[in-house]
Image (cartoon, rainbow, N blue to C red; front, top):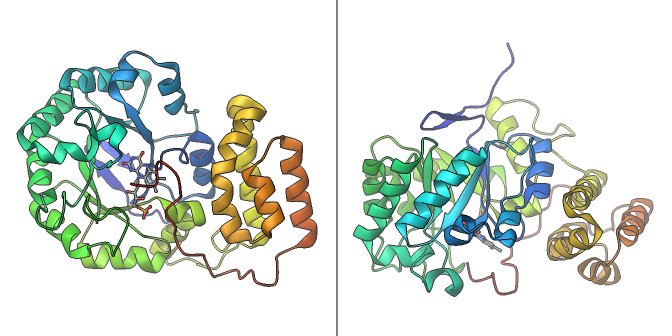
Length: 355
Ligand SMILES: Cc1cc2nc3c(=O)[nH]c(=O)nc-3n(C[C@H](O)[C@H](O)[C@H](O)COP(=O)(O)O)c2cc1C
């Protein structure tokens, strides 16, 4: 009998592992999700957050955000908004489109999202928010989840109350980033705060999120919070093998197998595969522009030197990318590169860095 990782259930939806990829706007598009899925261990991926109204209006830019492919399953689409009818219609349309779960964004602090009452602003009007969530749950048969922070600030840790109310209206799981909205990305993830959310609900899974980069970080999250699953964002940009590593650890099988203990060549292969999928998604210009943002995460790890870093963040042509990869393969790892040492997690610079 082959050993299987412990599954996780969002209502009737069975996830093959307890390890989820967090939405990272601008990064977790289908080429990245697909490349990560190929490495194994991923239970569920979620799209970038999408504006429910724009989805209802079939805005071409918004439809691009939910771009997927047949192997990109199971997939949740994350929606935001504050108008119940729009959120409901968006969810219904997504169900018809073949998506496996709807995630409601209640954590985004970015002005573009909060100015109309969506994202973290939803924490400020509890009864309207609970009613909105109930309407979305009632409108679809697929699971609806909510992703939120611990609260607005330390004086208002409202996540436990929200989670309990969400469970009562039929939400299938709640993802908690263990920081407050006021905290941004500063300070430590509050495991006791996540534990309070776990204790507040009766049976739905609570998914712990924040700063997980290694299997040891994941272990601490499980132990200190009692969460049912974990979700990993920036750690997966640095180490897309983390999901496979967690499954291997869980099964007690060889942690150091080549599949889960990647070398320099494996990392170059992953980067090349990711770029190739971006090319397939929408051609050369799109691939180069999208890759530019991701480049800094790869160079943090591969340490190819300033010149290559600059070339990658200004990438213009697929050929240029291929030449760089070929050159890095020939050169092999720089002396400072260490197989088992991951760089620290960073918050990417730019307008979306205020998450
Ligand atoms: C660049 C960036 C984009 C993000 N985009 C989203 C998003 O679209 N939806 C969302 O719910 N959270 C978003 N987040 C928050 C992450 O999903 C996650 O909760 C947070 O980064 C903490 O987890 P981590 O330490 O594993 O990255 C984003 C974070 C960053 C840094």
